[in-house]
Image 1 (cartoon, helix red, strand yellow):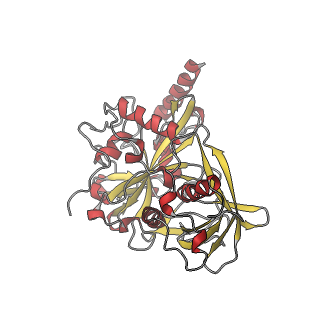
Image 2 (cartoon, one colour; image 1 turned 60 degrees about the vertical axis):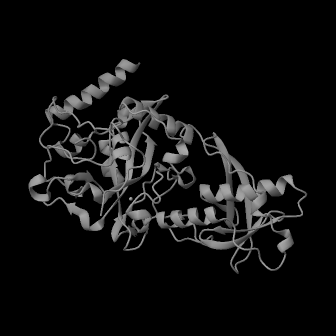
Image 3 (cartoon, one colour; image 1 turned 180 degrees about the vertical axis):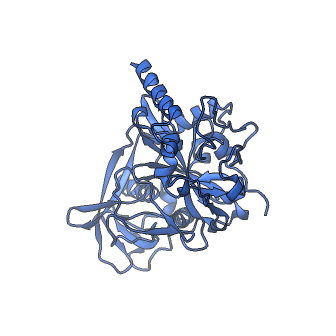
Amino acid sequence: MGGCCPPSTAPTSEDEAEKQDVTDVSFPPKAAEPYKADASPDEADDFVWDDEEEEEREEETAEGAPDEPETESNRIIPQSTLGRPWDLMQDRHPVWSFELGPNNWKDYPVDESVALDRYWTEFDRGDKSLYLAKVRLARKDAVVDFKAMTCQVGEGRPRSLKRRMKEAGWLSNRFFFAAFTEALKSAGVAVENRPEEMFNFGFNQDFRGMKDTGREMKRGGKPYKIPIGWMRFAVNVKGQYDAGDNKWLKEDESGWAVAYHGTAKDSLPGILCAGFRVGDRQKFEGTTGRGIYCAPDIDIAQHYSRPMKIQGHYVQIVLQLRVRPSGIRTISDSKATAFERKYWVINNPGDIRAYGVLIRELHLKDYIPPEIMVFGRDNPTCKKLLEDIRKELAAEK
């Protein structure tokens, strides 16, 4: 199959990735019959939002601000006066930050920055007599004072706030959706959905500037490795599975584990629109059964995503998945290499759900195909693969 699946034998020039059948599809996929951290502003640089929190924050944003406090209620900005949220398809957007300590600021997630900005915009264009907002930030009740530019969470001390406008850079929501649309078009699928129907850009996460602190995290009882160095675009999956039950996104034992699946541009639309399909020619079928190959480590899955050139940038695309823990099979074949033993095999396509699209910039000259990892650079066909890449790059000059 195409994507994160081991070569069944030493590769030959005739080997081709399986093409996804993506005709007559809808987005997002409907489930088959019966898809971090809980942090407060006191926590420091490994501050990571989890998927359970994403769901709860989304619900709270939809519900609006909590009831007004009994005191200073005449200073509260009414929700009914708020304007439309910021258009996240624009190439710049507001970012709100809170002060962790002296000269140490932490950005709020995109959706919370957008919510704060709606209140601030109303405050800024008024007579400044209404300057308080009672909102939910980091899953806690907070009171924001736009006159003093402070935020108080619970009984904690007020912390300073600041607002800035951030340029999205080349890897913007606009760029991403254009790339996604191009991939759909190349697979013969016309895009009829609006971007916000397919993706929830308010829950994007930028891991490109993050450092590995060594902190151990789990999802569904399995180790969770943050995709450091990548930009995550959130697929709009809330309520799409299990009769609207989103427990599979939780971070505790009831949630599903996180995995990654590297895939080609042509396969991406089919997976997101129609779901995963089990491919042929599976190397470890005898010991694990036929299934979909993925990995809990993005550094493994990324080898299966050949960089593509879009608008002058070479990018890799990897899908972020949730997989049912009980559906995970590991490679036990005695002939498997150390690299291959890091795969997970999911026999039932219903046990695997894509909920994020990860992109990073990687030049084609720096790409290492999975065959190299399995068979080594001295393998004749692997040498040819590398030579073909060199010829392709030379032809671009």
